[in-house]
Amino acid sequence: MDNDLSAYTGKPRPNYERMLVDIEAGRVDAVISYHQDRLTRRPIEFEQFVELCQRAGLDRFATVTSDISFGNDDGMFTARILAAVAANESARKAKRVKRSIQQKAERGLPNGGAVRPFGYEADRITVREPEAELIRQTVARFLARESMSSIVQWFRSQDVPTVNGGEWRTVTIRQIITNPRIAGWRVLNGEIVAEAIWPAVIDKATFERVQAEDARRKATGWRPARRHALSGMLRCGKCGAKLFSTSREQRRLYRCMKGLDHGAGCGGITISAAPVEEWITEAVLHRLDAPAMHAAMAGEPNDDVLHTALNDDQKRLTARSEELAQDWASGEISRAEWKAAREPLHRQIADIERQLAALASSRRLDGLAGQGEALRAQWAGLNLSRQSAIISAVLDYATIMPSPPSKFVNPDRIVATWRV
Image 1: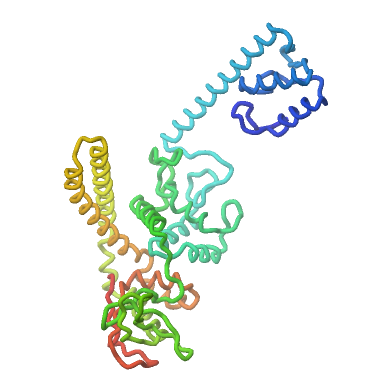
Image 2 (image 1 turned 180 degrees about the vertical axis):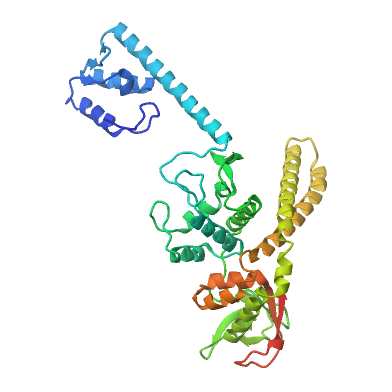
């Protein structure tokens, strides 16, 4: 017996293969099957079975409906016809099943399966709100450029199990937030085919931003700075170069560094790390609760419309660029004509990418505005990736102006350039 293993697909059937080994070894002098198509539904496999039996001297194959003698031409002719009929029936059944699945997907109905999707009940339609809220918070953190490892740590701290009881991993969470299901789309074979009948957990514009951010991370191999909260966010007030963290006499500093490994730094700015990190953190948390922040966020709904329009323009221009390349490859236009038409298209695409990047930055504040006081109470328990993501959502960079080194920070030395 090989239960739940098709005799048509060609996939391994352990007990069938064990039987073939027994036949070849001479341990079998007859084969009994309920019906010939229970043995195999593939004509080529039936011929291989017959050849093996003849080679081993086995000529008795019995079924409920008939017995087949491998030495009888008429019997073999009938058996071969039955094998072809069984294969045809299986092929037609496979097509019916495939068509049924396609129709079900096009109607937006959920698929089956033993494991329910995270965020939904076992019926695959009803939203499980506690899990849905975790998905929304995860999306906000992901768009705020928080690392996946940091998000996994946070997930594990929530004491929420995965749907199959396993441990949370980066790949598991990425699969959840990049699955179109959470935006209310029905997917079949990796393609969106219909609006789903179940409610969305996040809106479609937000999901498109998740896809764009995921693609950006994959394309650039992006990894967030994790060693220090302000890594990459401080500039030299003399030359404009980035400041690097360094230590001197058991005291950590941010310094403008000279040398080939540090770019075009002048080496003229140094500031104590801990005080400047505390000052900027407090400024960021204060700014999150400021009325100006709420005013800046008030126009966000329009961002969704703009984001969709920019995405459509980007796809249209990219398609035109690809058509242009095909025209040149086929000889319909010259190289000079291709270059002349390509350059303005690429400028437009680059401009759209800059606008999309600006919109992505503005959405880093999702779930943060108005939460300054709450975050202040949690700050010490947040990991560096989360702290850095929150700071960079509000602060573009800070310029450190010249002054004698001191363990205390003179706020006049810090010139912040805010995102909002």
